[in-house]
Each structure stands twice: as structure tokens, then as C-alpha cells.
Length: 484
Image (tube, rainbow, N blue to C red):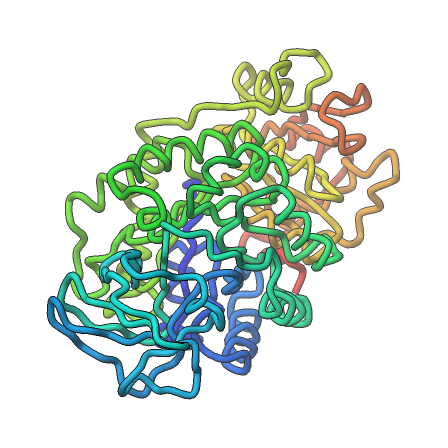
């Protein structure tokens, strides 16, 4: 079983029930929506469609946050080297003469001679003049400036707010529609993560902190400690820092995330050529393979599945590449902190037992998700079934490497026989089988060093006979991982 999650961005070419089912069958783990594109009505309809079609697939809503973008344009201007392109903070324009941006004081922050980049650095300009709200840019290369494309100014601190009004609107929307994760752009500190967490005010949606500039790199350890998930947005990272260093920075960020036991998503241009072509380049295959070897727990497609010509083929190809990479290189295990060798350390004990005993599956009982994350991030070779009674949280566990969330609301987690009851239900539903030797993990609290953690090994067939359990018929459908 492949343990690397595949995140696919849903867009105009993929927001139908038939394509969504095809994407799932090809290997999609998480559905991503880019909040910078489309209006809230479109996102609401798409969320409802995903929930109806793929109820066990978690949804990541990437919110615009502090990222500066061009607005929706009626005219997308093309230009040659040396031409002047006028950006403006007056959003009444439509691109025909001036291109508006969504940061209303950008003209106050820039100065003549500063370099400005657009569209993940594929377009570059130099500020030629500033006239009121208008910013005159001289093009350094020919191209077309399109709608909703990112604008980067790495030379200058643009002084944006930690949490924007748009953040507040989008997070309220995410909570209203039951989104599982929110992606936060340009995270530079633990304080930024905590400000978003306070705004969410609940266990879900969980936070995906995007490390994509020098500030994020400088504070990656504290960000990794504070967030739920890290995303490496290589598009902005390459523009905001130095494109030649992106692969080095990727390794650094992955190492930090794994040290803190947090999932990490590698994003941007993994199969960019498959937007227009049915096959990837050899370099793209190598890039994906190395991301898995580095220890990425998830890889993400953007335009490939949102607007590309071959969305299902791209997912199938990505799933094939990561599965092959996993079969040859097992991820290196990292632990939180310096002392992970005490007998009561949940992660160390789980890893030791799964490596020394013929364990075929691991079953984790988790109420908050803490135990689920600790066990999954220990880089086990066995598949992990994580049982919970919070439907929203259970769905998020499908992002954890090698984990499947199982929603069992009938299990009384506080009861002393909760583990036995969970195993019985999993057996009855067909998740566990006669020959399985299961490691059952129950964490007493959100404390990795708790002396009350419980780990049990179970021979499923023997236990089933002793308890007179009865499995469902082989042809019966399994209960959905989210209980719908």
C-alpha cells in the first residue's frame, strides 16, 4: 500500500462527479480548492459535490491570505521585452490599460528600480515609475500577465497584516462548509499559526502552514512545532528566495517537519508538463522520486488537475511514481526532541514492536488525533487504521502517511474494553482478517511520555474464535471511513 498522499487541485476540468470518482480511483487522497480562483458560490458547490461523491476524501481549502494577486481581468495584456505594463491598486480597471492588484497600498510600498515578479517568477519586471496608484513596470521578458496570478516583491517587506480581512471571511466559510484543512500563505512564525488557530476556534479545519519565503525558512522550526501540516510551495519559494536553492530548502523543510512529527506536502510543478502532454518529463519523475526519498508525506498537483488536459492520467502517473519510490526507499524515521528512547515513549515503542514482531496491521484509538499523528509519523511499514468518534477529525487522518481514518461513533473511548470493542467492529466490517496480527495502540493522553499508554498485540483469528465474533460476508460493502 502506498503511504504517500496525493493532493489534487479541483478546478474547471475536474469538478464533475465522474472525474472526481476517476481521480479517486487513480489514487487521490486529498481534494484541494484554490481560494484565489473562483468565487465562494463556486467553492460551496464544489465542496458539496466532493462531499456527496467522495465522502471519505478530506478537503483542503487554500486561502489567499497575504498573497498579492492580479484581479479577474477582462483583458490579459501581452507584452514584449522593454514594454511598460501598468499595475494599479485602483481595482476599477479591467486590464485593458492597467492591471489591478488586490493589495490596495502596494503603490506606497514600492520604489523605482525594485524588481517585481509575477506568475511564480515566470514573468519579471523592474519598477520604472510610480504615479499615484499606478506602478509602471518595464518588462524583462516577453509574456502575458493573466488573471489571479501572484505578484512577488522579494526585495521589500510589504508590511502586510498577519491576518487579513479576507482570511477571516474565508475561514468562516471553511468552517461553515465543513472543510478539513485550510492552507495559509506566507507563514513566517508560530504567532501567525496561533492567530489563525484562534480564528478557527475548533479542532477542524486543521492548519496547513505554507513555507514559501525567507521568513518562513528562518523560522521553520517554530512553524513546524505550531502547525498541523506544512506545505512547501516551491513556486513562491523560488521567487522569494533563490531558485537555485529550492531543492536544498525543500530538504531542510521536510527534515524540520519530520523532526516535529508533522505531515509535509511538496507542491508546485510536479507534473507541470502534463497540463498539455500525456506523459511527464524524466526530470519531473526524478523530482517526485526524490521528494519521496527526502521524506515528503504528500505530493500535490495544481494546474495538472485543475485546468490540464490529462487530470486523471496525471494522478495515476503520480501515484505510480511515489509507489515505486516507496518500494525502493523507506523513509527515515525522525522523532520529536532528543530523548525518544524511554520505555514509555509511544512512538519508540510502536516502532520497536512493528519492526521486531510479524505485525500486519496497526490499529490506533485516537480521540484528539495526537496518537494518530505520532504513530503515523513513525514511518511504519504496516498499514494503520485510526479509529475515532469525531467525524471531522477522522477524515483529516487520511492525510497521515499509511493511515486510514475509521469513524466508529459507537465505541465508548473511556471504557476499559474500548480497544476490544473497536477490534470487534473492524473484524465485523472486514477491515481485519483471520491471519492478521494487529498492534493495538491506545494513548492515555496528549503526552508522548505518559506511563499509561497501552500497546497490545492481537492474533485476530484466535481472538475472534475466543469471542465468537462473526465477520461480514466477503461481498458485503465496508463501512465508509467517515460513517456516511
